[in-house]
Length: 70
Image (cartoon, rainbow, N blue to C red; front, side):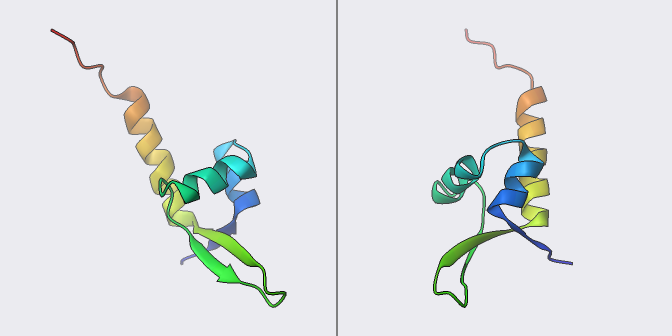
């Protein structure tokens, strides 16, 4: 199931602000879908699977062994 999350929901899951989520979307570090609402305003939505993949990537980066500098 491709559940779509709002930027606020994504922010809550990631423990960051909605503005930080918007920055991740802008910088293409987190994929998102922009949809225009009935009110004519564009809003971002993020697939739950993409949030999970982003979290997995952070965990790998956090626990990866440091590269030695010779």
